[in-house]
Image (cartoon, rainbow, N blue to C red; front, top):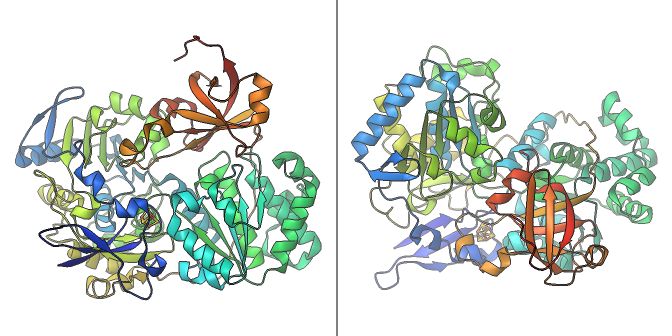
Length: 618
Ligand code: SF4
């Protein structure tokens, strides 16, 4: 039997054909389909090993109740659902005391039912952990820049590709194949990244802005373009032009550390291109000043009439945003002033109209009930342990035990993406139907089915028997998903595109960021379920430039101390020419949470010192 799935481990969502035979249940093959995200049907290491995380020992198999913090006893599904329903009903008397957080591995159907549950219980306190994509997409929505969004198959038709804060050679090899195709047809590739990643081999030009100063790079380029071709400035309001005027190239060279001549030559390349696309990733959307960086990148693409692809580092980041796991938008980025439509469709009298709490509000405000569906990414958040510790009741619905699950009062075992049918939306906004290839272990169930049962018991007016039923509703209520009706999507193996790429009336703007002082630690995030069986030594050292190593007097394999506020960490140092002086590059561990902020989950300002042998730091 053949099944078609989408890999949920990066924003490509590559199509994989799974050939199931008794002798060899999971043989992967290339689907011979003409228009799929992964050109030629290839897949990377993660796609080839997609089955492994689902087979790990740390799966949650049965409903569990906490006997004390971090210790759990098995319970039945009936008891678990009863307990969840009682707690949610109690807290719905004061809906503001509840917070719903959904992860990036939820399917569109599960994300949709999750936000519907929260809103019908009377709260917009709902958010997601697709941090980088959330910043990017909300800026696209703000600028009404859907029309600039490109498909992967359009990349080879461009003469210029700008890769900004993204390293596809290591994090999305199948995206790299599209860029290589463009290059083989004569396109130029410009890489913008402080670190010399493996993607450098493909690039014709590399710019290395000091971390957190990419906003200034974009502003300086806008300034130079408008001074050479003043008509292009007409797309900006006066207040944005005032900001752009403050950043000529010589000032930007001082801020970013990029020589003036390199900046000028970058502007030359941009202005001679007839069709370019800017693809950006977590380096732009998860660092210091990320919001304003993304805003300025979109504006740059807008005045050049280039395409954009905001590339998500993880699975269904795009879908969970489209489904409305956001405190400020209903599904399809519908504002609360248009909530009547959803009231009519959901057959309810009154949905909450106030903007809800975001995750950052929830960790500082009093929240007494957390409902977390899929914990992926949540452990990055500074302050999350305190918020969960303080809460009266925590429901965790997930596939794996995690640091977050330790705080649960009730754990509901969920199927992984490959253990459930459902749809997923990738970073080019292609919606694909992915089939179940394996049964969930123990008594685990799909997220949407658990949520549906809870909604039914709470008498909220919904009850779904299949994910197709949910998708049918999505296709009737979520703007842009009209073509994703199950009867169409299941018969369209290459998927369909979200249909609101109209792009009329761009609303461009520009902004400036805060100064970056001192050195910067850049964190490399791992795939949640994969890191456990990646090479452990890779996770145990930091890269430092030869210039900084010599300044603090350490050699290769010596130890350094990285300090940021109260956070103080000792690590083995590897001296590498690939690192920009003034920065250290280090694999992320949960201990680093204290050094980060929700606005910058990929880097922090820090001090770096050499450590004498035998000196102990925790
Ligand atoms: S490129 Fe991304 S989606 Fe494709 S196989 Fe690799 S991890 Fe999966």
